[in-house]
Length: 214
Image (cartoon, rainbow, N blue to C red; front, side, top):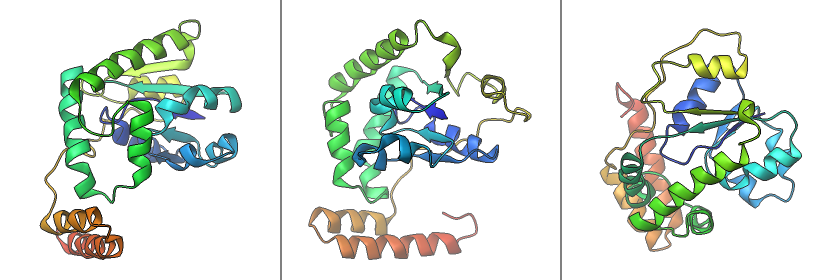
C-alpha cells in the first residue's frame, strides 16, 4: 500500500496521476476513509491513497495495513499558504464542496477558512510529527518536492517499480472559476444543491465540448 501523506496543495494530484500512469490503483482525496468504521477494508480497495484525509489517518493506516510505503510531498511554506488561500476561498466555487471537507479541515487544521497564522503553525507541527513518526523507519518514507525534482526517478526507485522515470505532470493548478461555477456556488450557499448540481453538469458538458477541455 502506497500512502500519500503530503498536505493538500503540495503536488498530491500530480503524485496520484503519476501512480495511475504507472498502473497503480490510486485514489485521490478518499474522503470516505474519514467516514468509515472499517479503515482497512476501505484502504485495500486501492493500491495507493493520497491527500485528504490521509494526513490525519496515516498512523491508523500504518497500524492496520501491512507493508505500507509513505510518500510525503512538500513545498515551501509561503507558496503553500498562497495555494491554500486559493483552495479554501476559490476551490469551493470550482468543486461541489461537501460539508465534510470543512469538518475535516476543522479537525486537522483547526480551521475551515483561510487563517494564515493557524495554517502556518499546523504546517510546521505536521512536518515535525511526520519526522518524529518515521525517525526510526527512514526506509519507509520518501520526502519529495516536485518543484525541485526533475522527474519521478526517486519515486520509481523507492517503490521498486519496473518503470522508467517520467517528468512530473503539472496538475490541479490554481485557476479562475467559470461563470457557471460561480452561479453554482451561490446556489449551494443558499442550500439550493440540486440547482448547483445542474449548473455544474452544464459547465462540465460545455468544457468537454471545447477543443482543450477548458
